[in-house]
Amino acid sequence: ISRNVFSPIEIPVGVTISIVGVPYFIYLMMKE
Image (cartoon, rainbow, N blue to C red; front, side, top):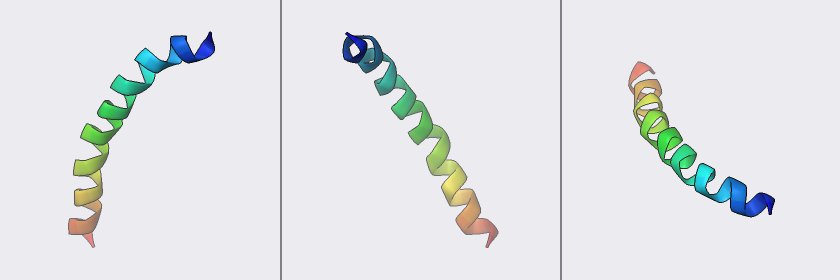
């Protein structure tokens, strides 16, 4: 049951983390 609840949530969260995380990672690389 818990898998059915979290599966629709995990996908957008993963996409959001990727969208936010990639530019942040590039920023850290540029900062050094």
